[in-house]
Image 1 (cartoon, rainbow, N blue to C red):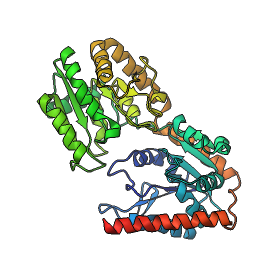
Image 2: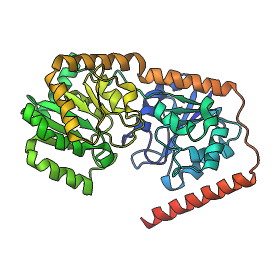
Image 3: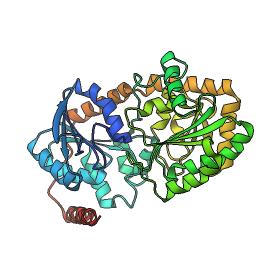
Image 4: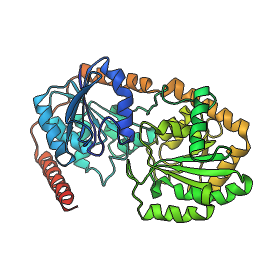
Amino acid sequence: MRLAFICTEKLPSPAIKGGAIQMTIDGVSPFLARKHQLTIYSVTDESLPDQETRSGIKYIRFPSQQYVEEVCQSLKKNTYDVVHVFNRPVNVLKYKAASPSSRFVLSLHNEMFADNKITDEEAKLCVQYVNKITTVSNFIKRTVTDRIPEAENKVVPVYSGFDPDRYYPVWTARGKSIREQLRTRYGVQKKKVVLFVGRLSVKKGPHLLIKAMERVLKRHSDAVLVIVGGKWFSDNTVDDYGEWLLKLAKPYKSRVIFTKFVPANEIQNYFSMGDVFVCSSQWQEPLARVHYEAMAAGVPVITTDRGGNAEVIRHKENGYIVRDYTSPTSFAKAINYMLTKKEKAMAMALKGRQLVESNYTFEHVAKRLNNIYLNAYSSKPTSFSALTTSKKKVARKLRSRNSIALTRKKNQ
């Protein structure tokens, strides 16, 4: 089967600059390339050639400014049996027009069917044109079916995954070695490490963990908060929020440590540092992949019940769910529970590793996707008729939207 992946216009593939979508693509591609002729479209990067073939996978890259248009031209010249569009439902309309005989699969990693992201007309056409829609959680599935009920039979959750060869549980010899190396690097060898991994943004909530440290340190004077990540993928510049975090952390001195951005090929090791990992999401998180990563590393997980996060966590079974997600006190209570009840925390960590190992490796994800591709391939391509008046309106909106976006980029 000739299979094409179309990444978003944000980050390149492979995931040299991180990104959950790009990391998932990196994870499933080797398994799918054994069965299919796989081509991956992504944006260009100064460190990558515009075209190359790696391990049997063809990569085609275009500048972000003309990305959608260039991909459309390439789709017209190349024939694919199945085209998998990542997280851009609006662009499905253009891609389907460029390759009407292809079967289309759309994967959603965020609330891309929100009113401010896609119009009713666009959403209905997108559902009509795709053979299947995958979502990273049931929460994201509901954002589609609540708006477009007729999409119910086309939408199926396909949860994310991890590479078991890259994550070593802290109870293994390799995991212990990695743990000690990083703890030595940051001077926290004999500390109880509370770990945050993610972008430094309000919706990720690291400020709440800094505020929680006052109560944590009263119970555990040897605790330290390690915040892993930067403002944006591969970006270590400090914005207003970052300045505020530094100000909040200043009274705690060495009790709060910022590592800044960590490259994608190193991030898996950092999870091994933690005695407890905390996902402090404030927004309706689709389902952050850091949950899989922390469980893979054998670290007990604390998360919020925002969005889809709690779908892979069972309270006090393989993790701890914070309901009062805006409260530093609630986070402190959860952290103190994990640091105090070490045996229970370790039992949760063991169950977490067992869960992801038996259900959520990239090989599991690739098999689920492969079945979806095969089912799509065995069915007829969805119909693509000439533009009706309604469709012409949508097309004009798309052209206008792209024109506005290009103008903004030129003025930046």
